[in-house]
Length: 251
Picture 1 (tube, rainbow, N blue to C red):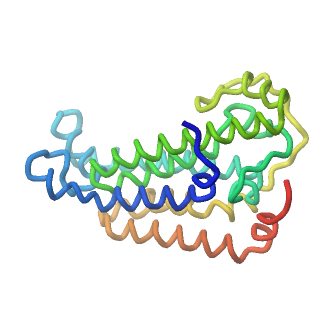
Picture 2: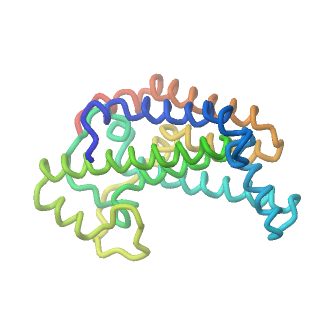
């Protein structure tokens, strides 16, 4: 069930391929004429239509409700990514190999063990609002299982490297569902917010896309905006010295 080292190294590529398949949804042409849920309409629009068909709200109200829900998911995802990266550091976050220094129990890691993976899943869930409904379901299932495999692989690696201190951390902090209160004592480690914001341009771009461009009701424009934010994040990761240098430095 655990992800292999090659899967961890190629994790971004694997997730990008899954997202591309979700947007493409080649099965729609075969299922669409027979199954309403399998059409090419975006999940955002489909959810708004379903809310209005159920009589819960009118379509004119349902659409803003869904847009706000998608933007909220993206905002929480971006916040988790920035918060986690501020403490862990972009070099560790973006490294092609698993790294083990000391047990990270600062910032969000006092409340949940995997804020970055939660943030990644939330960001992908926000992107799914722009996919066909069946594509969105496909991506959420595939990526959800893949992220779980990555988590299990990291936990096994860190347990082997850090031993009992990490086992104690595992028993004190939940894997995915954050605790509102924590028994973990705060540390003196200081977050580096500016570096984290620069490193997490992509989830910020996804949030801005959902929060701003959704009101244009132009799905193609929103997809382009997300592609631009992803491209900018790759360029920044390659060019910004503080991120590039740290990525090659030891923990």
